[in-house]
Image 1 (cartoon, helix red, strand yellow):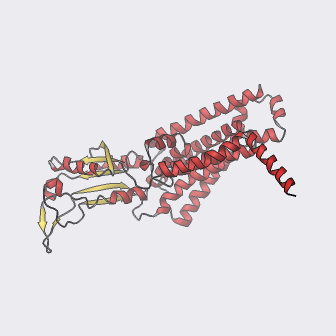
Image 2: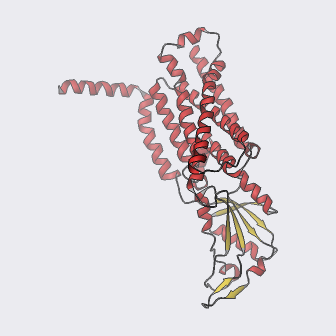
Length: 373
């Protein structure tokens, strides 16, 4: 009995060693997860892109900005002339927060004695306008409310009330589900769309239909487009289910236009389906296609900003994230659903998804035509 069991073990090991794709996944999946969780994933948001509305001509204003920069929580990348411009930038996702310094900044910095012998500011010296749809970012900016301004004013430390007000847009109650549901939409579509088409060509080969496809007048590009078209409708149905259930069950608001959400979803669905087609032309079995799907799904969940702040990742991890369709759709879905943004406000992400779809279809059709040869 032991000899027969050992014979089966040897047979399986030899078969596994010949399957280079599976053997590679055995090594790469744990390595990728280790690198993602150990190096790229960071829950401490730092160097968040921020804007500045400075209406004060006081010498204190540059000192306050320098003190905020020194905290390494924010990096001031843009200057805006008014609150309206700042709000528009937050809606587009250009910045996560904006520091507003009023014209009477110097007067607000006048200190008054308190009953306990300490000091306090008569009123907040400024405001933080924050994209509250991201609860991690909002909580990080809140740490700057009680930013000590003693160094700015060259005074000894004393008791003080919060120096800055924090105004949270889009999710003032800080409910995590408001941020999770639009992001979960990207994860679900990535999982299902890539999975559906990653086995499309492989399945034809395993079922013996490849010879029939070769003899038909259908061109490779036509075959690729025909493979993904039925699943576009499936993806749009999933979008409707997730957003509808999220609104009914969890009271997640839908502030954007249905047309903008439909267009963004269509772009992402097509990009995910073409990614699955490319995988299908690489894999030789359906098992390999599933392994490659998991290999794509893990970074899409961990690096797209769904679970961890994108801004907290190292630059190298952000480059990888930018190559993933899920990252761009994650921005678009949250901006449209929660911030009432339009597709034109997110044109860079939309163009990227469109370009990814075109290149993916071209690569898949070229690889398939080589197999025809």
